[in-house]
Length: 229
Image (cartoon, rainbow, N blue to C red; front, side):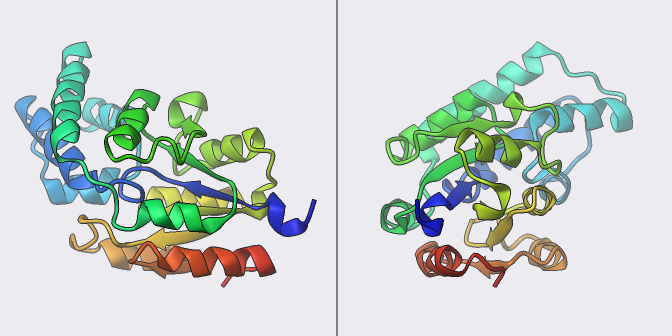
């Protein structure tokens, strides 16, 4: 097998494949406010982007002494999925980009499998990305490296042969901890909230891009050279 054939692209889902973050944050803020947690959309972006709902719940318990039950989770799922079915769109150009990459791809997201599959189905991407991995499959979510290492293992790729496409600080940290190349995508609708781009830059991803077709060139360089850009 040629060296370039062993390489793997690991996509985050929310904010990378689908433009879901504004919807998700809106639903989460309302649900938290309904339980008298005084948090704003800007604060949610800054603290929880790329992290699992379990992290949100732990924060509600430890910082606000609010202990959400199953009704809280069910309300979020109901509201979120309803809005996804009517509002969710793919990131512009992502389908054609995946087709053009000519390299194995998979999805590794902090979201639950059910949510990832719904997101990819309503945006027409599910058939392009059959290999899906969720933080629910590993002990520690992002920014720990567990999820990306699990995806690489299941896809039979060494960490050094993987490039991760991420939009969140937690995801970039996780990819770096896993010993993988990481490209930061800043083309989602949420990319302009205060401090977002500065925080990504602080983490020094190997490349940053904001138009999905740019990924084709970045991945071709990665396949050929296997070096950080």
